[in-house]
Length: 568
Image 1 (cartoon, one colour):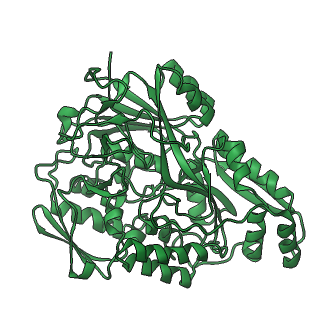
Image 2 (image 1 turned 90 degrees about the vertical axis):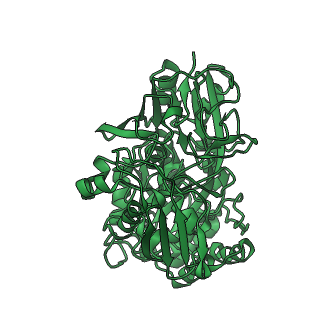
């Protein structure tokens, strides 16, 4: 039986969501995303985000098996068949230690399970672990017990030693995107065949949530020893599906795993993830049957499909945000000393506020995304128990011009805004450029393939980047890694000791009320032009053919296909 089941928003059970960072297209999200961090293109190229409540989502039994649609719970799901999923952008190399996109999180959710997942209530739930960590020594010692009899997709047995190997790799691999999140861990020890102890330098309230993301994915030690830094080309984890091939950047093929402990409940024989950057093409492919599941649709097309009985739509509100990163101190790139780039805003930081005042969050959301998102100016969504409403600045051209005049910089101020390729991302960039022109900014929109854009941002080869983040339940994971010196996700290069001190206090606090008070200070601090202009909080929308039942679409925007299969 598949052991990841949790309470959903409509009272039914749905699959546990796995994942961590995810940067994505700003309309969608930036894992580790987002969308650098699990980032997603500043406009999730398929417009999969939509502000809506749970609709005709899937349900599951208490064992997590045989998940079926609420509309067709009596329909028989047949074994076999291929599920084809349309994504708006390509994941990076499929290495849990280094991958940093929202789309990678979706792939990992189906082939690389972790110690924990996040349930629909936003709480960690055990997956490869048997229970929540036992926390002792004043919050600095975590003891985790593992499932027994579990095998990786190469047949290697899962044990405590494998967990130690994976976490230590996440900490030490030079290209790791997980290292900053695990920096407080001083040791990881196998104290028995199925028991792991993690020692922290100081209490970290975010750790369990961190282990419910990609930092908690356990990789086959056999495959790691064989592939080394090339693990992402031939990944082997624990999951309902196993990696088969990646014939191009835009196609990933998985097949049903014979080693999975819940294999008897897995219906589909294979899964294909294919990248479709144009929403209209995504829509036509779904209508024609070329794909069965779509995260790459425009909001208006999803609205049309919701009225067609041949299709199902599901929408979830997420902790994702969209924003604009500004290169303020990252001239040299990741892993090198900070330096101010030849960038008008970096040379004159007050221009960041002028730029923010020149654009309207509401206009961007309405014109590009049909108003489906929630305008906001912090990394914490209103649904978060740690969010405090601080009041956002509104478009004020007169004030923006006054700041520019005081800076002494002559107009027009030439800047380049990098956006991930895709119709909605480009449209978002064009709206931003049009609005900012009124204050004296001359913005060139530069569409860039998503993984290339992430690499450019990490290397410091950009001025501004429209990028999203797929969001995390714990507030620390939505903030710290983007402002920590040396973090692979700190594209702006900003180093702010005051902010880092507040974030350290937030990790050390043990109650929601205490942490909320600290993060209220964090949100106010982030108003001080620290490199990221937050635009709005995002929702995610999914459409699939009605004959495909059992697709679990969790509130973090991840798709789980372990129980999915075709009827009829």
